[in-house]
Length: 263
Image (cartoon, rainbow, N blue to C red; front, side):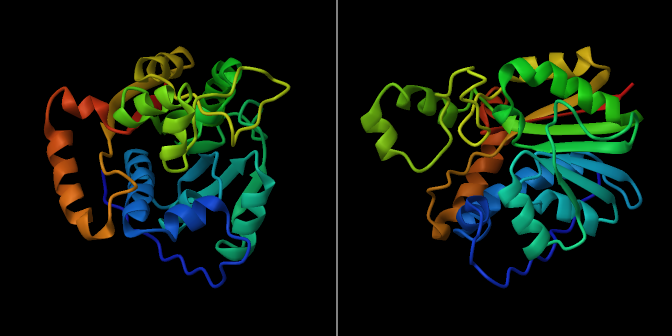
């Protein structure tokens, strides 16, 4: 697994910034570290190499799409939200192949891609649609191609607190802005930005294997809290490395990553 170089991303203007750009990428050093690490883990475990065709699912403001392109890949990014796609096309990645599309009906022929990656999308997919989304991912990836998907880990302390917070309004108000697992499975009320229901690792693994993607590995990572002061980021990263090296403890990291091969 090769180490990827973080791309340069000059942002000339802060006008009209998507929340994820303003809050995470241009926020504190701690939040930027957390965001970049999520993308790095997924892209590196996808084993990107120059010339490969890559699909970025739920690409949002196209940070991962841009990173894959700067690594020499031919990339297509899809997302349900027009706002972020339009901003990305104009502000950071002119010429990127970005389109609005639903992952349960991908607008690509069979076996179009060598790789498919998804960073923090599956938890926003309407639960009844998830089997179809995974089936579509398998359909558009070539045999021998690789898939890498990350999603929040429902067994992590932060997701446990969120489940409690939706029942205790005072606790919710005390927490920093986050997605909470409160939206119901109501198709008429569904909106991806308000829907947050992370998958347990076993569910994601079973779903991938059911559509012909042989899971090759899983990991849970990320222990740094986004409220950690920047001055303590070095200490936080050191503690994170220790936590991720400890058996059993390492299963409770904030993010779950699963990767595998299309068979």
